[in-house]
Image (cartoon, rainbow, N blue to C red; front, side):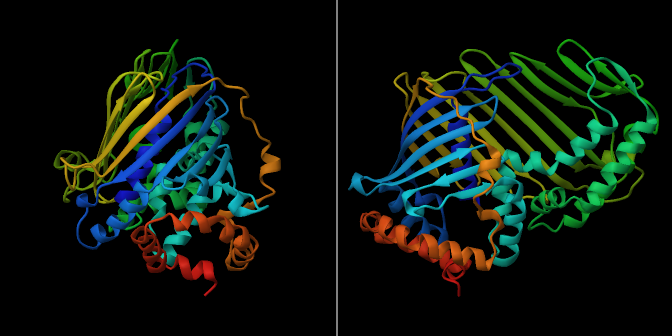
Length: 461
């Protein structure tokens, strides 16, 4: 799972290379990329290392190249990319991925006349079912996809708009409105499958799932009790910030300026003695975009005492992440990103990324799993990322997109029908490519497909 997280982090960092625009409209960007991947098996151990050697040979035999156009305002993306065997570029496999975070389409000569729809609204449910049937921990990867969080909390946000609204002026939020909001959230925490699946993914392999469930069910009473005391609260709107306060005690502030975005909280302890903490700050200038995130949900002897409880301290989750990324591209310099996860909910993780960039667009990205080795990188990416003029800002009709097969909603019958339709073009299209691939790499892939049960599923066994 950590290897997959590393790969996702690499792609996220590459996607962020053009920089982050805060509080202002961002122009569409177009990039051409040509990348080579090098996996270092010595960073693994035991059985993992044996299979990693196969994957290392496979990645070293491939080149990833293509173009990407990204429109930040609409969140629309359009990218064509090829997996190119370094020994025979004519055997490349070509794909096009385009659409929005909520709906993405994939086309390829390998699929013949078929187009695959990735309806992200069904992503987390699909991943949870995959884990239930095949024990593949895909929900962890779904948690890293920002749209999964947006989709999970959509109706909670909608309830806020319905009961409180988002006025552009300071006002008093009446206690009655807060009670209505708490009631709406209470229902959602019992009935909203997207929300429940998201929290289920958070405690997928954890013994603390019951503790998390109890804390979630206590959210409405927390809002009415420790947070607001059942009284009116103040919404304070300033030129570049909005804040919420109970009396003189400000418990939430959000600041948005062209050069800075920040969230600061000062929340009370829950009835179970947990202290929620969240701080986020992103600053940007022409050269660098810097981000720091701290998220924690833990109890300490002090918070337990404040709640009047005699219990052992517990950390459900502590997440710290920081990054210094280029504010424009191309650029010359060194940049870093780090992320760590601790607590009873998620597997522990300590990742670090180091980027070296040059004015000609060449780059070198190193990913370290510091829980294994701080000296040897887990994955190395070399290549170029160059800026191109934007010819057309991508835009697609979602009503047209949803007509295609949603791969996240297939069942045994529809999956077998789809496999049958694409079998011939996929077979003929991939043969030349497979000839160029190292045997050890193909064997590692087949071993993982077989062990996970995916191969039997695709073959209809």
